Amino acid sequence: VVTAHAVLPAGAHSLRWVLTVLADPSPPGANSPKMVVSKIHVDDDARGAASTCTLCPPGTHSAVPTARCTPCPPGQVPKDAGTACGKCPAGTFAPVAGSPVCRACGEGTTSEEGAVQCSCT
Image (cartoon, rainbow, N blue to C red; front, side, top):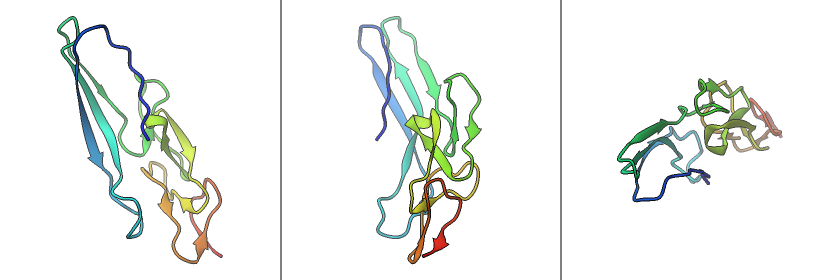
């Protein structure tokens, strides 16, 4: 689920979304492939201008749109359209800083929230 907020002046607008498919670390049968919006381009606003917003690359976040993108720490991945990092849920893990998605634990293993690896059950 992606939530985006934008205030545009009255008039006609064209939006173009660029989606990037992430490498799928999930086991077969999982909801895949995973994609992120990597760029939003707005054309044809009331002033005839165009603007481009480039989102942070997968595995990184920026709390302020004009700030530098930084990797999420191990055990966390970007959430809220890349504006923050969030802990991986129990049963998943993110082994290194900058992991784009939480990976599912394999059969016979589990993890707690925010894990960097899974353990045998």
